[in-house]
Image (cartoon, rainbow, N blue to C red; front, side, top):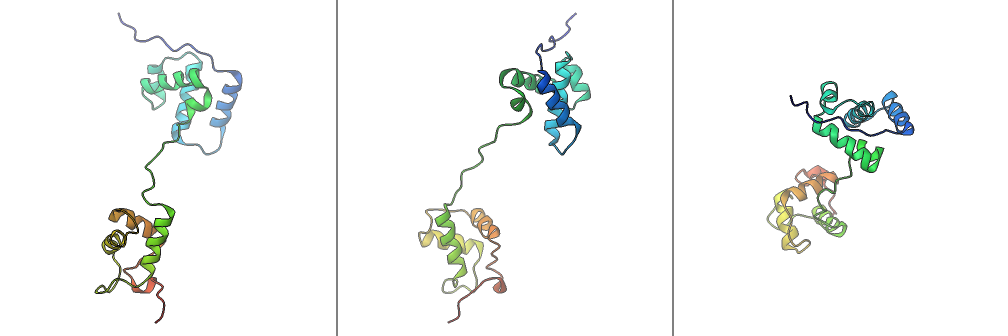
Length: 159
């Protein structure tokens, strides 16, 4: 009869156990951190990953990974994720400033107001940026709280 994998054998130091209990005792924490802390405490008592997964909403594989990360790199590695890099910025600060300045000026001849599509076309045409997408422009305008398609929200110089 096959019994499955044996339980992970490792010790959680007294200091780390105290820190886990403090973390679980109070304060606002991310749910995933709390679940990992609960799983780690139960692992330290010798429980198997499948048994822990019945009470803590994590898969046995995830629980084993938490244990291995603790054994390899310590408590912080077991509880917290590494920061993710995310996407690189599409526009530099100078390019953003130029586009915002362009939107604050009069729209091109033949247009009553700026639109996201028009800003995108003009930014490339005026060589403010090599290329840019409409969504990037939309997010830039939104972050500066600019709504150039609404006349009353744009500051224009008087002639």
